[in-house]
Image 1 (cartoon, one colour):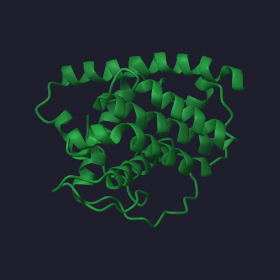
Image 2: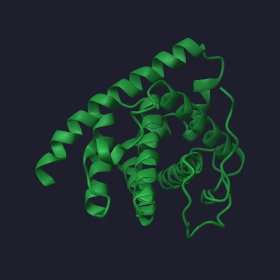
Image 3: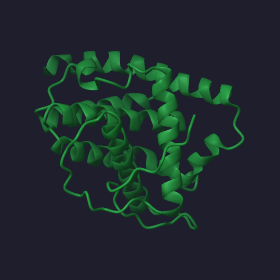
Image 4: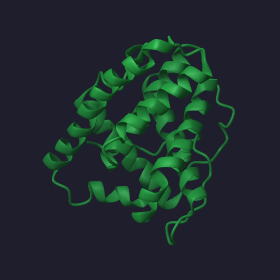
Amino acid sequence: MEVLRRSSVFAAEVMEVFDRSPTDKELVSQAKALCRDYINSRLVRAGVSWSKPDGNAPVPGGKLAEVSTILLRLGDELEYIRPNVYRNIARQLNISLHSETVVTDAFLAVAAQIFTAGITWGKVVSLYAVAAGLAVDCVRHAQPAMVHTIVDCLGEFVRKTLVTWLKRRGGWADITKCVVNTDPSLRSHWLVAAVCSFGHFLKAIFFVLLPER
């Protein structure tokens, strides 16, 4: 699959810390920048126009830009395998997009379920695909401010759940190993496992959220 061009004009500027062990704060900041980049890419692909208040923010540079490109590339493959799983997230969860609390609770519930059985890069990619799919839903339903809520939620989830795992791997740059000298068939199997798991998680979360609707 063709490597995607780097997303532009949306990701926040993040300090480059790949030549040393990153701090928790840096990992979370990078996670949010990557999320903004991922979401913007999906909004552009969906042909959705919206006004973003941080539109003049520069793109990530250096290693973080490479990480963003790879994350998008893996996300493309993941979404290609099951094109309907990461679309219409709100409808699949049967939630209202007019309540920040509902959107926040739903996203965090799905995120928690994705990582119930452990952490892998495939599940991390799945998390970003969920965030982007939900963000596209929000913008389409005239709730663009929810995009920033989703980015903040992802950052908080990373802080509480993924930071220790990321630090053991030296940071976000470790994801580049997923596409270097990797058999495409093995990578596809790895991504299929992530997307199939997410399909089950959606069903589980639907029933978790049902009493609150």
